[in-house]
Amino acid sequence: MPTFALGPNQYGKAEIRIVRVTRGPGGDELMDLNVSLSLRGDLAASHLTGDNGAVLPTDTQKNTVYAFARQHGIDDIESFAARLARHFVGSQPSIHGARVHVEQYPWRPVDGRHTFRRDGGEVRTATVHHDAEHTQVVSGVRDLVLLKTTDSEFHGFVKDAWTTLPETRDRILATSVNATWRHTGSADDGAARAALVEAFAATHSLALQQTLFAMGSSVLAACPDVVEVKLSLPNRHHFLVDLAPFGLDNPDEVYYAADRPYGLIEGTVRRDDDVAEEVTWSF
Image (cartoon, rainbow, N blue to C red; front, side, top):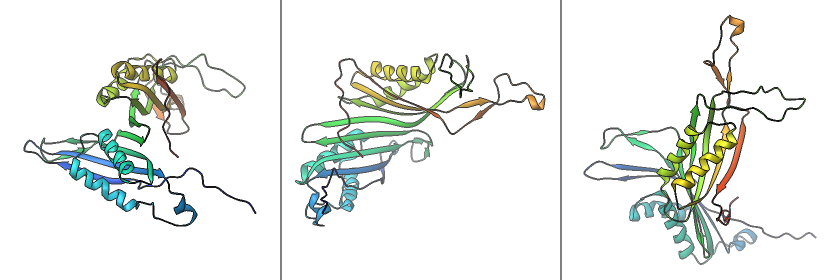
């Protein structure tokens, strides 16, 4: 008879939606979060025999998030995630590692007091891995959409029998930035985001790969505590529409924005003296 062994496993509560209002005489502040928890440890019995003696219910994990938001507040998503991760590892003998991932949805004040407008674009992220050996903090941004109407080229690429893409000395360059940055201290995430945007705008791009490296390098230069930046940049293609059949010219003014398929450029930029420290664990 074949035998089987249990491999790496984890469990937790995913996508806990929480809105925290901090009320004050000068107006309210709003934090809108989506929190996902994953725990690892001595949990084999639950899988192999159904013994739940070491299992902290995921409903309890959800309640802990709400309780911590009330007791400790939410200064920033990194510290909130770290507090939760340390709690689960420190309070549960069977839990040896915790992963807390937080997404923050931006709301902007309208009247400076009680009214807010939800921005539909980018999302701030933070992921904390905590165990007995160390705590790793990775901040980031998702769906930061950027576009430049010029200062982008693409030529000199490999051509074979199936190549139809023409070379270009001027094109629209657009992407939806998904970026994370690992830091050793309390990184200024506003500065990191600003560095990404400024590098995208300032780089005369001969390839999106070149822009990626410039963006990562810009974050490292602006944020001394950041040691590594990972970027995933989908190339949101814009194609010039052929208006000749209608007797019209098109001097780089009318484009078709294609949502798929798209090129996907990904890479990591790190300091020369940094020892690569991959994310502790994930699925």
